[in-house]
View: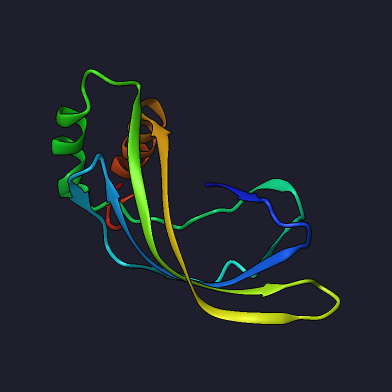
Length: 122
């Protein structure tokens, strides 16, 4: 996920607790993780987000988004952040409500990988 830090100071993302809805209609399992990553002042930073897309959701999602090359998502929740590396000012429960999209092709490739790497699969 690309995260823009429009502030004039660095911000560290510590804890994330969020809900994700993909394609405007499919809620994903609750997201809770600790990226522990600094976002540079005035920069866009890639933050890896470990999302789980339940296998039974893949077919309906692919059918719903058949005419599009991008699949939209919304992330809404709370983030704990630390501002300014030197001062370490912390703010917990900072609300986020962000929109984004992922390439449909990327999702198809990821789903195909899941077919071959599911536990117990040979």
